[in-house]
Image 1 (tube, rainbow, N blue to C red):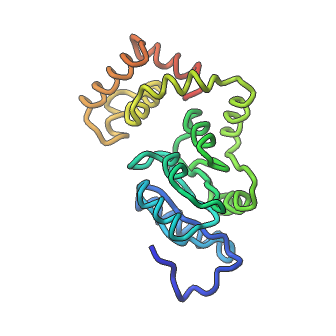
Image 2 (image 1 turned 135 degrees about the vertical axis):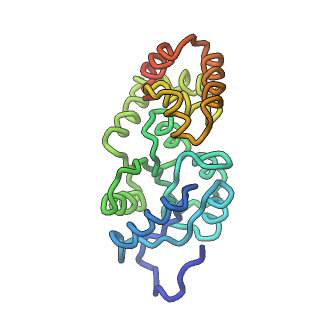
Image 3 (image 1 turned 90 degrees about the vertical axis):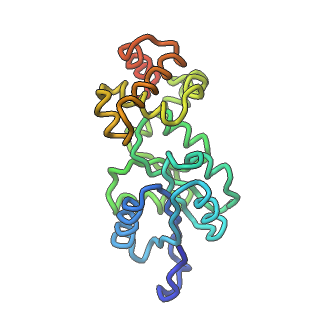
Length: 225
């Protein structure tokens, strides 16, 4: 999306590219930023998948990229890996508060990670802090990062296990481990119950587990819930 040529100079504004695969969510975030961040933040472009995001970062070289973790084409980490914009900082804005998403995204190069429950003014403040070089996390998520660096979370083991799962299998795994019924998982992910069962069987086989009870304990031990 091209900048509005009537909006005036942007020299002192923090420029942002907004990346999320849900158009309605992007519109909501943009509206919040335009209201709460007037005179502070300006959204230059939006993107819905990895390829669009990489092109938008290359075209606009924004100060900050607001980046969803799970995207078509490889996810937020892939956007950071493929982007060549030394002056750009990445702030994850995601519905996920799972430890592996937080830690993996920070390891991939993000300067911060906040959840989608954040308010407009809080998001503007987070963008400003990240643009200045600070690291910003929602309070609970900061604990994951501290625990990871302190060695309380075995990153190598978590990564090795999770690498066996596809992105969709991870989503099913997390919901099942949190106690969702198959019907609820199907509704949440917009897939059939039969597909949920297939993914669950694959998850248990790859992780060498025998029941959803063992899966819940496995996920809890790794701080993935």
